[in-house]
Image 1 (cartoon, rainbow, N blue to C red):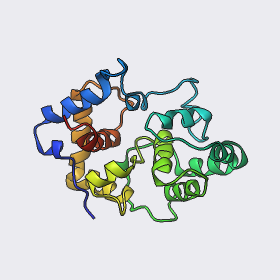
Image 2: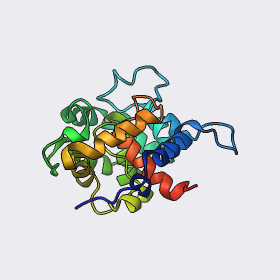
Image 3: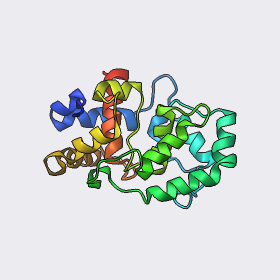
Length: 210
């Protein structure tokens, strides 16, 4: 199942770079601040994000609000306390963050990252969209953010992770390399992974087309 690339990727790089700079670096007229999503990739208010790679924290719950979702109080209680050890084991099983393009094997329901996603779905207020953002918070290079807008643009409403993986790997990683190049041309922080470049371009196609 192939994804449908954002339209801007069909043009020269300049168009995509302009979209990325608008998203990540231009303050909103209404507030004078950057859009909240522009703070997502580097958010680390406690300074412990690296150390906490295998445990969900309150800072992660703050981070996801920057992408316009939240976890209910009951969900937070379960995620951080009642089942915190379970989710720590699931995160550890996923292994360290790495680029999705380098994952040769197709994920299955028994793959660690899929088991983590499925477990998250059992927590109140955490559905497909919130789960994807929580996993992307912990493994940003490995797991692509999903929401209704991104799914519509990329045509990944039925399946998201593996179609994106296949697209990145096609033609010896051509799409992945282009996304990295676009990040560099836009002058963005290395903390912004290739996956994020793809999903931002998709989101901006419908949410901020001009």
